[in-house]
Image 1 (cartoon, rainbow, N blue to C red):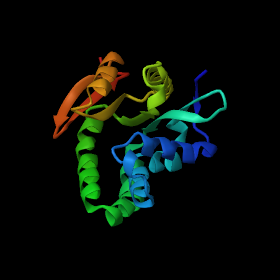
Image 2: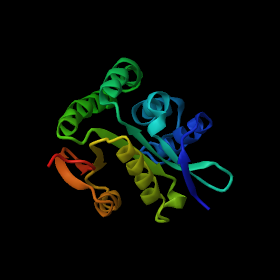
Image 3: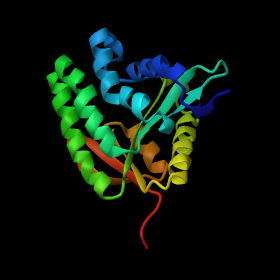
Length: 191
């Protein structure tokens, strides 16, 4: 049975493994690719905003999926630029410039009230079991308790399965950028 619980430090390597296993680099798992990918998509969240991260675990309490969230965007931008993206720059200038550019674009969604952003990944053997829904609902409830205004995520335009998932979860497409759709969901709006 799969359960959702808050992230704990003991989950760190499992989250990195899931991040790698579900990425475009899954078939090329080496130290450089792993370091670069984890620096871009999971390490910041686990190191700095872990209270907004949740894992889906199996009956042995082993993570099989996660949802990571940054609520403090100023902290995210500052620490990503100073720490994590510097490693990415050393490993892959292409990935560095693409990720850096997407961070700058994301500021417009924050300014529009989609103040938090998320990353979610689930091991392929556990897809289509409602785990993604449980993870996102857990995160949304957490964010609502904190009075976070809204949430956004950038999704590949080609990933029809993920796009259908976000739309089913009540996210709206709020922008289109090269090769991607940006989905957003507001929790609180001004009347």
